[in-house]
Amino acid sequence: MPEKSVVFVRYGPYESCGTVEHRTSRLEGLQAMLTADGHHCVLEKLQEWNKVELIVNGEIVFQCNITHLDFGKIF
Image (cartoon, rainbow, N blue to C red; front, side):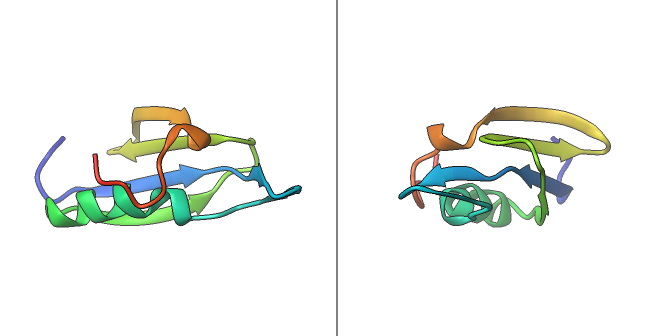
């Protein structure tokens, strides 16, 4: 990934405690890591459930199920 990139973090809602909502708690570690590396994160909501996408320069560079991310854990 280019240095000091703008990284769009697109995330969908997921079910927790019986409700489906857009939540950012599972993204905190990812945001911290990207920010520490000098990147700027922009969060965008998706309508697709359980999805996270990282987009740099218009290309998806990573995607996964948001429930596979640990709360606040830095990779």
